[in-house]
Image 1: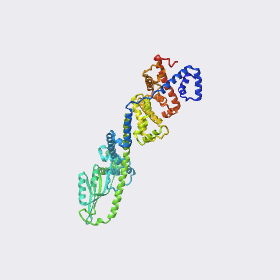
Image 2: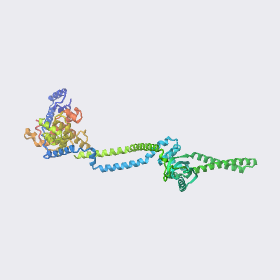
Image 3: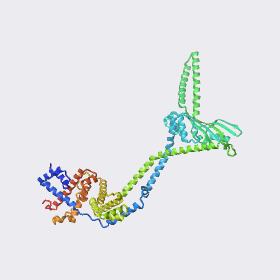
Length: 404
Length: 200
């Protein structure tokens, strides 16, 4: 063992914390090595000097300062034990934090309004199937969902875009435009059927459409009914639907679209083939010499022309159907006009009360559900906000801790 | 701890500042000294000694008397100072593992006049200042073990527990810290041309 290694043991030797074996070997070495003995002496002296260092007198104001701090601490501990909340309230960071939270909240609410209806309608669209749905208070978002249901998978989104704004249709869609027949079906209870009928007619005219068919009649002395089929331009469909809802109490509404794109373009392609056929037949006719041949070509030509006509009218019909949406409206007389006294409505009060109770209960449950969904949607933002607050609080208190 | 101290302790636990102030007054000097040796200057020492006593006041209800009050109080003081030193060294990004014994070489050259009355040398104010300068110049890592061992008089086990390291680490760290101080003292003494005392 080199002196270096023995010298590393000296400190522990002074404090008598060496193992017996180490101590025995060190002492043996010290007997022989004067350098190490010298080292031990110097080290011992250093330690003695350090240990004999006097205690230091605190400065004069020490006790008084301490007393002040102690008393401040006492009042803090006993009088008011500030919670984290109240300390945060007093924090100069509070206004900033509140502002940050407000901004986050606004962003969150705005964001939710942007995407929640879509999120809500997705499952419906996926389910597909039945078009019919009695939903008097159906909103625009749900309407969209209804269209989506009616259309084949994948078409829905483009169709929605096309409906909302034709100009936003992607370029590829322009050369292969969707052909969809829009339909809506209303049953509306109104106070005055003839007046409502007139309103519908003027509405249709205003929107640039026309009334395809209308029938109005009386079921008995004071019960009118009417049925109208309106045609309005595709792009006015939503406006028309919204206005019709204003007429009275909507007791039945359904809407949908029939995608005839494939049918349309198939017909168009067949038409093109047929026209080429016609061309070639005409050329053949010019060359034909024998009467027999001429007759045969003519027969063939007339058959082709007939088919062309059929296809052209089909295309026209589809164009017509898809350029104008069809809205069927059934108008019904309300049971009791508001300006007459009747005892009819007393009957069934109980059952209607029960219905009303069930209805509002269901609405409440639905509303609560929406609330939960809304809160869940807000949760990430709230968490973020809380994290921000906590970080601010930590920074704040660390700073305070440092300054103390 | 005397019977009177016990009564003071009880009253302190009830939140009595007067009693607490009276209780700690007898340990005040030692607490201050520990803080002073740890921190190196009076300003920090004053602040941290007070901080330690406030901490003791805050948690005196938790003091169950397993150790003596004195030990408990010194323990808190050392903790407060160590935390502060660690925080500072972290802030300065200095590595504790650097093989530096002194933070810089500007150890105050308050070399005592060793020639005069060697028996009274330890009472010498100049020597006290000189030694304090040496401790202060040590890296926090070494300063901690030196103060804990030589000033607080803690055992190796106690130091290991408080620093959360092994006994071996305490041994080697203390050994190196002492050697650093000794080397410095010897060098300064040789420089001042007074070799007589250590090289008898």
